[in-house]
Image (tube, rainbow, N blue to C red; front, side, top):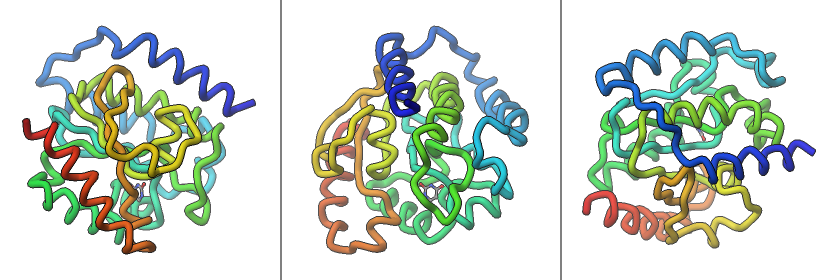
Length: 210
Ligand code: URA
């Protein structure tokens, strides 16, 4: 039921593309920070009960690139900031390898609150949270999306394909060219995937730096 609702929402997003709503460039950062405050006490799904902090997202509101992860872990929940734990440290290195500093880009997650025990977010939790991500994309208007990991890829692209199927392809979300690679936490657990992840990053870099 809720997966069906998620797919219906995705279909609506695909056909509508990015909304004709352009905040003035100098208002983007302020708008994002107002929305982060507005949603800090969100009760739209059960994840609210277990959170210390809602992790809205952070970074450069004018970035050409938005990086999208799955959801906060323990360190992110404590600090209220995305990708600050071990996976975040690896993410910084992955970005540095393709000459991108974390401060240049905007980073957000599919769900803004930590799932208990770091389980995958449920379809109803993803659906409840997705409008926040869509709104962030509408404000920032990035030219590229880089999705980290299978859960985020399947959620935004509305499929149940493998990570291998998603990589080295240019997808589209809300009309924006979208790339997929391994989640850094998965790379920490499976170092043999670091080589294919490097291929993915180079594939993305070619388009991003063109
Ligand atoms: N994993 C994610 O997907 N997002 C974070 O913010 C941290 C870990």
